[in-house]
Image (cartoon, rainbow, N blue to C red; front, side, top):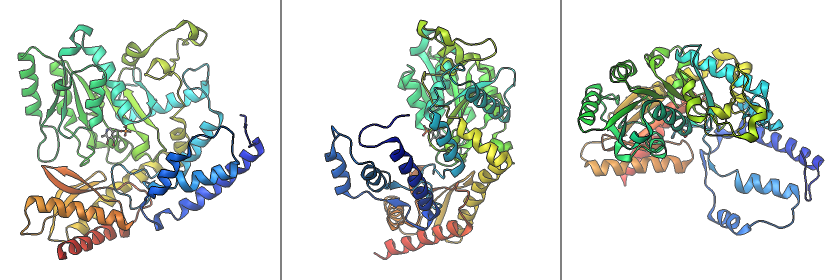
Length: 473
Ligand SMILES: Cc1ncc(COP(=O)(O)O)c(C=O)c1O
């Protein structure tokens, strides 16, 4: 490593140590502060105006600027009461693993570059594939940047396995109306026409309706299209629902279709005592699983797992002349042959490090806590007769809305949106809205391992108070 400009290497070392101490001091008290630190407009404007200096500046000034004006603002997604989107309650152990891995900045594209790093990633991928129930002799995968990339990476392999190149334009993939948008985006990127991504309706528990799926496949074949893949979800973004995976597997088997499961959020349940919720996932051809969601890793840490790794090789393997010195050994595969990236960090090492430090049971317990948090929230919500539970606690998710009598649907939407705005603005909790059945609802996704019963009950009580406040106006 070298430092150039005004800063010398010892300056950087000192700044790094100081920063780590300040970071831990901030994190110790994070959940006592607000869930959001809004960036003042003048700070944003000053950054936009600042530009790039031709000469280096004093390092302490630049570090202070970064801490106070750049990284300090935004959603504190690792706050115990940040309950929006998929929160990011990052484990300090993961962070340390990330720092250790980044410290050497090894190129994890090939075994020759980083033999032990890739051996650790491969061992971990095999462990995860075994949790999914994939066969040990064929399964494999890759650490990628997240769920979107995992879905894209798997679906390109699915396309190549199931469709001749001249048929890409007639290929049809099936998702549900609750499938994450990254799936349709990925399908578009790999050349499947947007109108050939068919969203199958869900039942009243937000699970793909299998009769409707079978009818759609039949109709598409009759219209001369070529169905090639069904994407089931294990832990949907809105409600935490799990599609009937075993039934989807049956349809895929009968119809000769690729089965992909988007478990970006919910696959973490595979390491817990709730594993049976994902019954049938072992029959999938591919699975997305994000460790930067419910395994508490720093961004970016997602996995794509295939029941047969050869499909990734078929799609991604390349052998340019300038990489021939680093070719595969018979027993080892270079990660650049398993996905779109050539240069990549060993993203899996922080998870490897976390599991070594916490053990799989420690991590499982932390995941299971999310189920309890959502149940506490539901229990508290049920005490208020004005609350309609729209989707009960599933995994770590709960959806509900305030629905006092006498308001129109539009007024109810406005009420719930305003309640969300008020609680976020108060800084107490991050509860945001989504839409289910055309209704605006409040959605809780609670995965913070250190969140307590009082955080969940207190959040609902605060929401109740904001509801009363809005209604009083
Ligand atoms: C079910 C599901 N799939 C995919 C994604 C996309 O993951 P990422 O944001 O890591 O790309 C998300 C994100 O929340 C998700 O919930």
